[in-house]
Image (cartoon, rainbow, N blue to C red; front, side, top):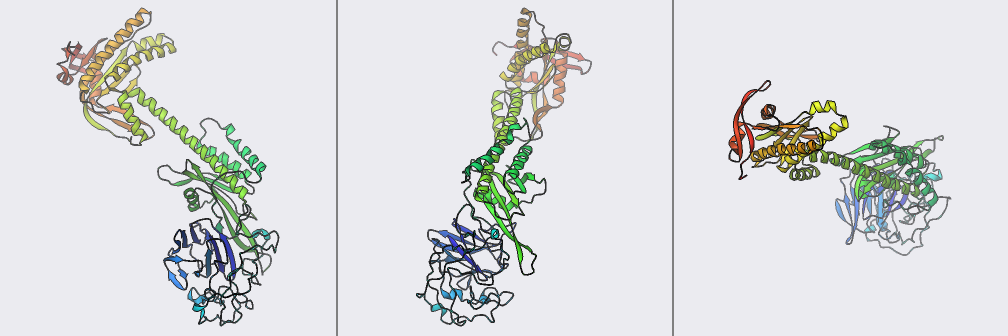
Length: 630
């Protein structure tokens, strides 16, 4: 779609390859496709034009001065290339095929009194373009509205002169105000010299560029180096990183960029990696003075700056960063800024230009990268944009690899903790909870059997044998105990030197927890007995085992932070089980009276009373084994 917009006699043309076009003024909160920044009466988000299979519509976006189509204020309505559209003090028209002749509006649109839209602060002619004999701002009085303008029909006339290319900032324009001599435009043509009557325009030929001032180029064409000098982002380009025409320079830039990670140390923080990449980008993009890399939080989506150059001195427009993330392509942002010149009659124009590109991986936006140069004397080129897009893909890969490595490390740590403490069925469920981010700190109280086991002779043997031998021996004994525990769905609360604490029925409830606790204790005793026999036959050292099991109330659950949670069991029942273990002889299993009442039908046991220096006197049952039917 080709858009023509005319402000105080200065017409400009823009080709936009989009079916939805936002028109307004550029600001930190708005990045329109058509920027009417020269017209202060236009709102930041003024209106939107949509092109569909059924035609075009225009929608006012609650603008301050309204959107006027054919002299009527509208909120939303269908429009055609012949519609006369006015936003503030700017006249708009369009063509769908890029042919200016087809987009020409009737003469009455050119002769509408400007007071019907928004009267300017100083007298100006009411038509879109003033007569040749009248300069902008010099009209003696407004042109009266022609009585028969509504019925006027186009009639044959000599073709209008070819338009002159609009000067760019690169041509060292001396002023952004209307020129002394009116620029010639293809449409709409100037009305008749008589201020009281306006002739209908004739069809104009398709615009062609006349090189009146080399090396000026029309902003509506699409050569890679052509960029508009107005305050607006360039037409969005697809976020592809194909090498531009200057292939050798492009490849040299990429080669220098790819050298960055070769010296990365293991475990380097992501922020440090991004800082090094950004430093190299600033070095390789011609004239880049500022830059930033922003990443979106996976949970909240909030954007934050992870790297900037210079450090902490970069201001990034978040709305523009989100725009490139949503639209999945980058754009070049340009803005003409008027400053005080050496002459009182002229202003110096400088160009503020920047580039935004999205960080995409598998079509998922991770963030954005931004560079700019507030003192650059010409816009960034298409080659610069293509290089930044290549950089953005590279940075997205770096971020994704870091996420994968972090996830693997966290999962590995979690799997190590889970595999060492929980039986297979419980492991699978806990891993699924972690993947779904459902595991959170929690706890509950319940009456559960707790087992406390102790290896005897550990300290004495450990002092006499080499450290590596002690570690090997401990691993062998604990492997035998762990196998017996997991066989009966026990959960290991903790290893503590020569002791181990086990709970049954947690974190997953188990109706057979009491029976399994006693069977597991007997299996642990038998496993250590068989291991000792084998070690004695080989001439190795041996350790003995004492086991105590008690049924009582405990608090169990996952405690700690989300990043590091541990399963834990605490309560008086743990202390009681410890006392039973301390009172047991080598190779004995002692259980409390409460547990015995639950399992007496399946075990052979005898009542006993033991006294311990630290735990006092208490009643218990010495378990000899399982009854034959069990």
